[in-house]
Amino acid sequence: MLAGFTTTTALIVSPWLLRTPGAWIAVAAAITLLFLLRYKLPHPGAWLAGVTGLAVFVIGAFTGGSFAWLQVGFIYGSEHYPYLAISSCYNIASLLTELGWSLKDPLLSVHIGSLDLHLTLQWALRLLCLGALALCARGSARHLRARDPRVLIAIATPWLLMFALLGQMHERYLMWGAVVSAVALGVSIRLSIVHFIISVVSAAMIMHVMLIDKKLDSTLRTIDVLHGIRPYASVLVLACVAVYLWDAFPVRIPVFQRGAAKAATVPSLSLGAEPEEA
Image 1 (cartoon, rainbow, N blue to C red):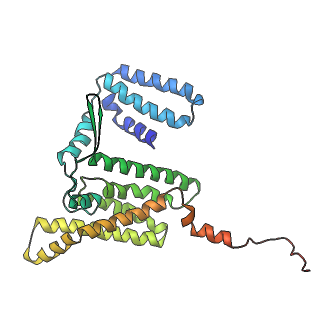
Image 2: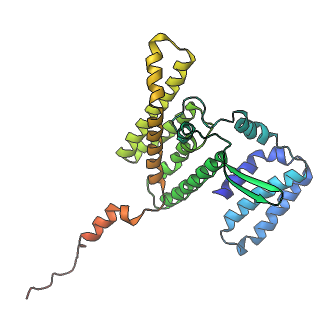
Image 3: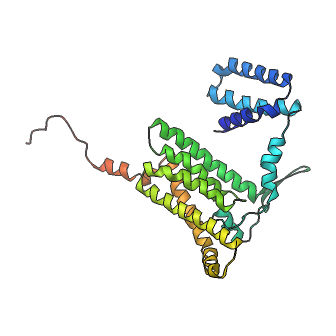
């Protein structure tokens, strides 16, 4: 997953990173060398893709490549609104805000000589989301090999995880997860019901923000109700996302494999001749 993400990103931004002929020649030389050594490495395709992507970033940094795409497209957006929860969002960030947490609160500090490293809540949520995405990637590959329709759930779950686990989310971001999770209609009734719950919650958040923008006397009661149910709705959204993540999970705990346990207790059907009774 990391190799694919690195290579895809490097391919997209290569026109800005590799701005000189020398940079392109250096990348081509690195790819050629890795291609010749691929037989000596485990998982050669992943290594070739990952190291190639890293080579593009490193060579671009040393040859005067532009990182404006990173500063404007990502860093500015993540630092412009340094708030854990924005507007009316039903997610884990909203629950942490109710408990008094903020985006830059340090969870862990490490001092190495003159270097101070701080793990903030913002990065802790990012790492948590990244770990969940790795599980989805693993589940997607496993379900695809088994021709299991749950591969659709493994593909849709990252859209839900983004909203549920990360901070600095707007209420409208769950709309993408609500749309993509419609693939559950082709998997199971239980997940389809969860999809409709997510869709209703997404509409409720958007409606709440729209009502706040134009407060009318006739809508004040609705605004108060939507504000009051925010903690409960946040727990509901996290539970729905957990259901999707469980179905995207590539491994099942034996204790929860009801089908396997039931099959083990049922005697197998024998096609041979019955033994004669004494």
